[in-house]
Length: 179
Length: 435
Image 1 (tube, each protein chain N blue to C red):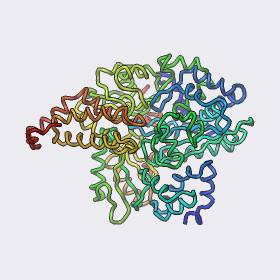
Image 2: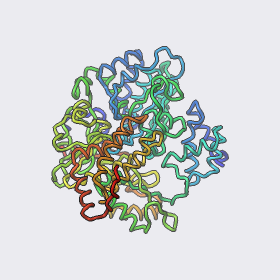
Image 3: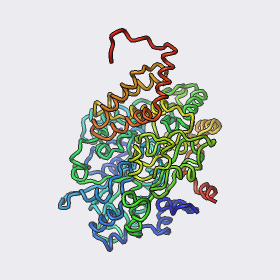
Image 4: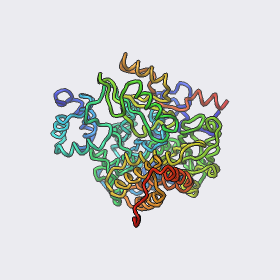
């Protein structure tokens, strides 16, 4: 139960809104963080907390692509395939990942480590091709970079190749180019 | 030195600037909001913003001060400010940089806007994928709260303003302001029928202003340096100030470039973004995000301001400029964008919901060399029956890639269809069938 473990966080979330239902997305995120996806039991519980009917929770949860209603792998690789990334090779990246992991888009590796999804624009159009892995962005992907990222994820659960606070072109770059 | 004085990117271009409260204050931050609280009435602040000519940076380009002015003057209940940080328009990645590199600039802009419209609560609706951006904002709000800049009696005044971060969860349509409000209320992000407008019936049915990140980030500078200063930048009187343009696609140096409005696409693409990758000729570009119709090399000398781009048959939109080199398959490019719109249609209005699905099917058929010549007519007809027939502007947006590529590169469609006919991939229609 979310309430047993996260009462303080739930109270904090509820305190931000004058109308309880506004806390729905934050609570669904909390449920997803807990179990890796949003379970039916969690949706029932959230309905109770917010005094909504379960269908009101379900209709909202199904609208948003970031809420997983089914389990996904430990690392959810989401590769952008919108036009801006496609112009600079996102389809090739999808092919590489598929070959390296032996899975097709929508599938999860048998060890439940990686799920590959194809997604629409993630607002990193100047630094494509790119993918999001769980909370992190990985940009300007190359074959070698992908190898390192996948190896890092396997070994340490994260990778130093993820993007920090975003700025592109980088300040140094700008100076050099203008000089 | 950059060719133009950066305004919004100025701090983050300084070596070592990390966007902390101390960094921001050292660079002169939080002076504008002090001035506003101490010396100006809310109406005076709105007046300054109106006079500056600032227009919304999210896409529609509505004058910001005018938008604020629509709020009912005599309403006693709560009012809200929502910062639109949903940045989902393909080709656009400026708000992400403004948030992650200089969060306090945005917060100060929000405080000024809240004061002007009389809002005591405000929400930053940030797209769900920007997990890092949300964390950075949360941390910045915590810093500002500890300093007494956010919360009760800010800067020792009798004004209280709270700011909360609210994460979206992956829906392009939530960048539309009424869909954003629905989403913030914990519902499916379906745009509302307007009127009534958010100015009178917004969040929780209360008077509400929704402003884009870049719009709000401009406010401290307008207050500090004056409306006249701002109105002298760009191409006055209708397109004042700078824009952070996001250049993507086949250029040498893609990225965010802050330039005054009114420079040409040629200058942006060839001087700032380094020109074409591999020095190939430019074939096409999208001037303002996926919703803006494609333009051609003959439009390179069009000025980057609201009116000039509209006159050229497209729109400045969100400032996302996507460049395509010679050799790019335009039908494929239009299909890619159409697939985006098909995926993102919220499903509320049938012309958009059903129409986007039909458009994708026909486009796929043509790209896969199974098209028929009458498909071109069907595409045009469908597009005409979607645009302007939906609750929000999504309907107009989704038809623009197809209509504009059909206009400029019709021969590419014809070639693909003729290739299908020569390959005899489609069976002839039975005699007497008419579409």
